[in-house]
Every structure is written in structure tokens, then in C-alpha cells.
Length: 354
Image (cartoon, rainbow, N blue to C red):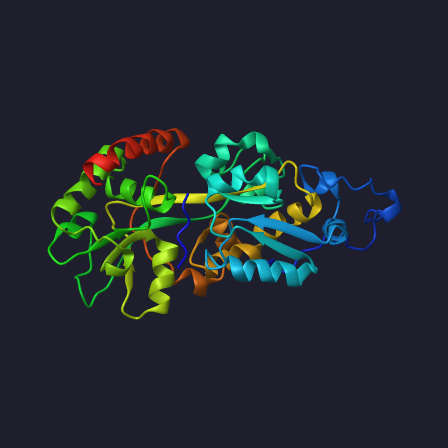
């Protein structure tokens, strides 16, 4: 199971319905020239056929920081390559969001998959592009200019071994004798671990870093903080990771504490200097198509367009039924809240938890 520190529904092609009074279809000669760096399909390509043609001429797509076992990216990448005949070069799959940005100048990826705080901090590095499903993405999960927008997300959860410990109903249950609790990395570096600290801090719908650090300090004092994930009987991690563990191991279960639901999303962006700009835009259309969003769902992630897919009857309900259930609306931290909390965790974790 990868811990990150820090394919398409068949493409729907626009058709003109022939009939009495129907407008004449534009011929290729009447269409404007392709602009591979345009900010929308209509503006740059006019039709999906022309976008696909332009991307195939470029021949390849370069991605970075996409582990193949992370939210089903292996299948997503393979499906995109097969669908369009475009080679996908995969660079530094284990890299963090921060590392992906840092390496962009030398490695020249076409697209990014980033934590929201990293995306917001580097918005000048991205090329605006609004996918066809733009209106389906909730407003608080996208930049209004189209520089970045959430592709998928998850809720913080507790994975546990029922043969060793009782099912926890809250984070405080992890203080009970017998639990050995692990975070998904160091919260000063790993986004999943940081969010685990913040989830444990939620009281009355509010997350506070000081409470989260204090809680894990108490876990350590009680002897309940595991030194390694291998030694843990419970792991605080995103539900898509814990659900994947449970699918692979019958001795593993996952729950989302009803009193402390924390949600977070990873966002998509196009490199402003993408060597393959048409392929980059086709990749985004693919990810946000019904097929692409359901492929994220297959990886136990929660697609950004999930509500719209459900309303239109295109959501894979069998896959959706596998998701761990949350009994409350998730708390989603703002970028400012994340920045402040990260600073606190980096400053206090070593002294108070170690």
C-alpha cells in the first residue's frame, strides 16, 4: 500500500441531429485552427475528435507522482493509453506533491495531481483549462479560473484488526488498552499523517492542531502509539487506503468515526509549460468523464463529480456501496487552516510526541 508523503466513459462525441430546420454542420475547413493551450475544449479544439487527434499527434503524456496502487491510478493510466493510443511516461511515482512541483522544471511533467494546499501555493505554474464536467465540480473544490480542480478525495478513517481489538467508535477509543496505533507516516511530512492528526482533533465540527498533537502525545504516554505500521493493530489513514487494505485482507476492517469526519481532496492541474499540451487536456477530460470518475471510485476514492453522476444515473452504484460510511458531514479544512495547522505540527510534534 503506497503512502504518499505530501478511464474514460466512452468519449461522448457531439452529434448534430439531422432533420428539417436543423443547422448545417460545420466542416473541418470551417472550424478555427486548433489551439492546444486553450482554456477549454470549445475554445481550443471545437470537438472532442479534434482534441483526440491533436493529442495523438503529440504521441505521449508525462505524469509525475502517481503510484499505480494509489486510488486505482494503474488502471486509469492503462485505460487512457489503450483508449487513445498515447504512451504515458510515469516519473517518480512515489514523489510528494511538493516534490512534483520542485521537479517540474527539470522533468517537465504535463500534468499534476496535488494536495490542495500545494496547488494553491503554486497556481502561477498551471495553465487554466475547464473540463466539460466543470459545472459538476463543487465550487469550493476548484479555482474559478480553472487552474486547478479536485478530481477525487476521501475521508480520514481508522483501519483495525478485529481479531486483536474491538471496533473503535471514536478516536478516543484508541486510548484503550490493547490498541497499537499508527499514522500513515510522519505528520510533519506526510499529508495523510497530518490529516490523521487533524481528524483526531475534531470537536463540535472544529479541527485544531493543538488538540491533535496532544491526543497523539497521550497515545504515546499510554504505550498505544506503534513504532511501525507493521506492528499496528489500528492505522489512521484515508478511507481509500484502509478500504483497499480491507479488500485484500479479511482480518482488516475500516470505520469512520461518526463524531470526527475529516474530508480532503487531491486536485488536478496542467503544467503551464507542458511539452504535450493537447495530451494534457485530453487527460483531464478523461479523468473527469463518467468513466474516469468511476475508475477513481473503483480505487475507493470519492470522485469530485460523484453527486452529479448519481443524479444522472451514471454512478457505478456497486462500487459506491463499497465505500466506508460516514454519519456526518465532513469537515474540509481551508488552505489557510491547513497552513496554520501544519506550522503548529512541525513546531510542536517533536517535543510533544517525538
